Image (tube, rainbow, N blue to C red):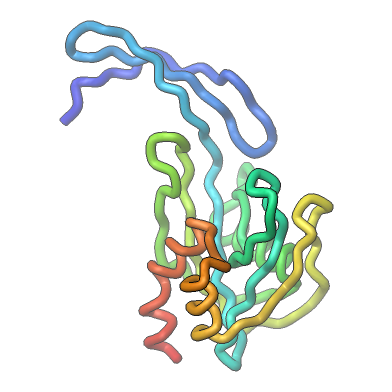
Length: 180
């Protein structure tokens, strides 16, 4: 389908969370071009639902946006960790809840063209609260519980603006509402 051939890939910058890369590629015309992008090991988004059908959300500060964001618990997949293991870890860290019932409902690429990163979406139910959230100083996480209608109203009012949260909800919504 494509006459583009990768010639090389170089890491321009690296930190514990992602790599910034520069690929050189060859076009069918013979021209050699550069393509810059970020790459991660992926991330997880968990949609936790209590027995009374309320959603477990987290409010945390987002540095680049300079404001708080209401989100589902989630975060990066660490080296050697499966998406399900990352989902269980992130759920516990960010919300203080634990489950043995994680259901993967989909995945998506959150930022095609800029970032090579896959978001894995899980639904978590049969939750047990076991500890306070373990947020770092930069996130300052607060757990909030909302009914589905309240959550959807927050979306309509612009209170929930994180694209990954909106995409995860779009993928999982019908399945969640069918099971209510």
